Amino acid sequence: MALGLFAAAALAAVASLAAHVALNCPIEPVPSTPPPPTPPPNNLLQRLEKLGEGVLDAPEDVYVDAAAGGALYTATRDGWLHRMHPGNGSWERWRFVGGAGLLGITPSADGTMLVCDADKGLLRVGEDGVTLLASEVDGTPIRFADAAIEASDGTVYFSDASARFGFDRWFHDFFESGATGRLLRYDPRTGHTSVVLDHLGFANGVALPRDEASVVVCESSRFRCMKVWLKGEKAGQAETFIDKLPGCPDNIRLGSDGYFWIALIQMRSPWLDLITRWTLAKRVVATFPALVEWSKSTMKGAMVAQVSEGGDIVRVLDDSQGKVINFVTSVNEFNGDIFLGSLATNFIGKLSLAQVTQEQGAASERRFIPE
Ligand SMILES: *[C@@H]1O[C@H](CO)[C@@H](O)[C@H](O)[C@H]1NC(C)=O
Image 1: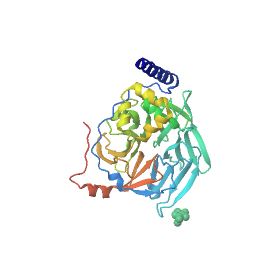
Image 2: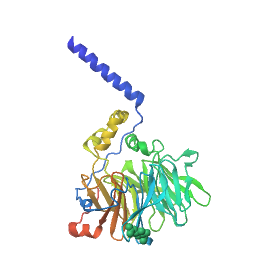
Image 3: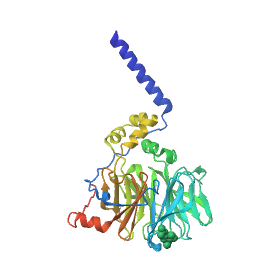
Image 4: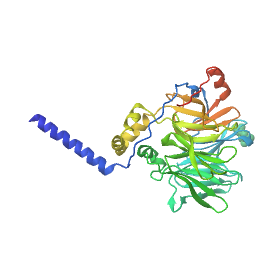
């Protein structure tokens, strides 16, 4: 009898949980791309120097102005674009945009800054204010403007991470794995925005190689970056630029040597690796906000990779347990240093590549090539 009552109570609890999930789950999950293997940790990112500590609230992207001797720019959660003077290292609040969703920043040839506001779209920020360049494409809203780059002919390529969730619910998009991101093109001559490539798994960083013969866009939830040819006989065609990355690619930037630097978010933990194997488990977790927050808190670590023009990993630097920096979202090389942005810090990280190369030793320099 007691056992029967217990079984009935357990069944009722399971049925009520199932009903709650069925009614309230915010996602329609498909299977996640299994995470590729990661190289052994080297923790070289732990040697970074902290710039602007305490002044910068979650500086997602960082841009270094080489022409201005290495002036640094970043956009933070308080709606400001901040600038660091290279001469004395002092930070100033440079331009105010507003909102909590400022992500990618990139310079425009006319001296203004192009800014991706996840909540509003593509913005141009100049001395005389903020102009909204694009908030929709083909009649659909740009839900999650993320990163941009301007080509030498003035065309702006930028990403819309997800058609399903905004910046405040980016984790839901990762759980859902629905591939609704897009690479977009803004033409400053006509003011028209069009779709270059769609069905991307969280469209994130965008970069142009030196010859601008193609444009690269990263798909965070698929551990890869695609490239779309802009010139030549393959113009308009898309192909894989690099895949099986040892982390989810976020921002990508061209270095002074023609190689790219890619920030690789570590969306890994034993818990996340386990639950993302089953769509049902993703469905249950996504239903409970506290469980979503806790799942996010299990992620630890930071990683960046240098990648050749041909799409081969040249080196990987990490802080495997996130002792000094976590959740690095951007990496920018200038004059032998790399500068790191993150959504989990209140500083920009600066690391001398010469110093880490010396410490690694020429012979043991890490060369990680995924199979
Ligand atoms: C740093 O340099 C900039 C540009 O030269 C200057 O405007 C600023 O006042 C300086 N800040 C400090 C604290 O010296």
